[in-house]
Structure formats: structure tokens, C-alpha cells
Length: 326
Image (tube, rainbow, N blue to C red; front, side):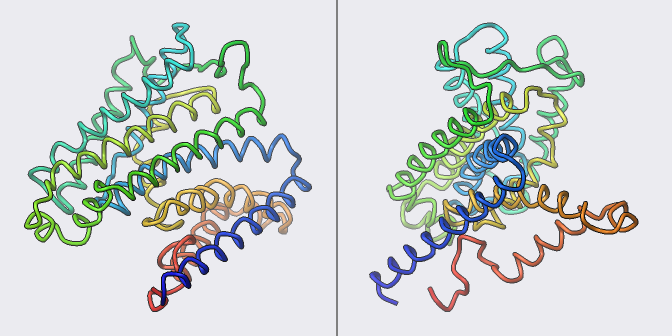
């Protein structure tokens, strides 16, 4: 397939995706009301920012992180504590990003000696340590009781409405997506893909594998820190269990559903992870009472949707329909 045909196909897929999202959004607005839909949109965009960080680590660099939720926790708690001490958002948000990036650097340290499953297990241990530290350090984090988070304010303007939260999340997602596209098109992005395809060949070509992995985790951690900071404001409360292993696995599932090697996969995956459970919950209300009250119905239906997506679109919703078209 020629480059022009591939670009044309990408434009068609992008246009179809935009039209599909617009139709779904219009239907949701009509059925659920603007306030509810905009609140959910804010979470979709925020999860997509975190998904972009996972795309860099998994889809571009070929590593499997099992502790990405802990990096969101870094950003969420940094933003919460700074906001509670009166630090304005233009200062606290960058600091949350820096702390998330620092957490990514810390999680990447074993990458210089470990690889594959062993490295994935080291990130799992990192996540467990962070969660336990958040629980035990009660004087700072409030422990298991958690902390209330004030509304995000930029000067005299406060993101206290669903519309404001959705708009701010969308702007942050657009900026994060632009930065990711630049990184992927750079020499660093080419190094990531070389490491993903064959580490030995990449090392033989003069690529510092440890540095490439470290930068993927640092940049991905920064995006996770931003997502965690926004999430803390939108949810209004933070506690350690919110950023445990369940969130890390959810983010991994998000990028594999959406398409781990494509930036758009972060948004598609976030839409599935956030919106589909809500849709299933609403649809279950129309079922017979006995069936609707069955234990685990919503989880079973969501699992069926995820399996169907993986079977029908193994490269993710944002990927090509089949490898033969590559």
C-alpha cells in the first residue's frame, strides 16, 4: 500500500471516528442530560491523558508497566496537598507533573538490569510500595481516611462545573497529544521503536537502551502526574486504594483496547473504560427485575464487550482492521 493510500485511509478512519463520537455524544446528551455527560467526558479526557503515558511506555518502547496507577497517585496527592496549602494551580500542576516524572524515573531504575517479565514484576513491587506508603504516612496523606480536594482554580476562575472540567481536560489532552506526537517523531521516538522491536539490534546500533526506557517512563510518568492531578480535582477526594493495582491494570486494558501503538488509542480506550460501564448500567435497568438484580451482571457484560473488541480488533479500536492491510 502506498503512502498516499495509507494517509487517505487514516483520514477516512479519523473522520469516521469523529462522526461516530459526535453521534454517540448527541444521543448521550439527549438521553442523560448535559451535566452528566460533560462530567463523564471530563473523566474520559483525563483517563486518555494517563493512557498517552502508557502508550509511550508500552506501544512505543515495548515495556509492560504494572505500576502506572502509582504515578497517578503521585500527581493526585501532590496536587491535593499543594492546593490545600493555597498553592495556585499554575504552580501546583507543573509540580504534580514533575513528581509524576520523578516517580517514572524511580520505577525505571531496574530497567538497566532487568527486562521482560522480571522488569514488569519490579514495577508491580513499586506500585505496592507506593500504595503502602500512602496508607502509612498518615500525617501527610491522611492515610486510609483520605483527603478532600478543593475545586481547581485559575485566578478568579474556578473549574467547579462539569462543562469547565470537561473543557480544561480537553485542552490538557490536546496539549499532551501534541507533545507525544512530537516525541514520537523525534530521534527519541525512533530509539523507542528500535528498543521495542529488538533490544540487541538497538544496542548494536549505538542506542542506549537503559536511557531510552528511562525517558519513556519519565515522560509517561509526567503525563500520569498531570492526569492524577486533574482526576483529584474532578473526583473531589483522594485515598490510597484509588491508585492501587486495579487502576494500573485498568490503564493497561485501556491502551490495549484502544490500540497500544497509536495515540488515538488512548482516547478510544478511555471511552470504552469510562463510558461502556455507564451505558451497561443504564441498559440493565431496562431488563427484567430478576435479571437486572443478578450479581455480577454489569461486570460480565463489560467483560464480554472487552473480549469482543480484542477478538474483532486485535490491534485496538484505533488500529488497522488486520495486519494484512499494513
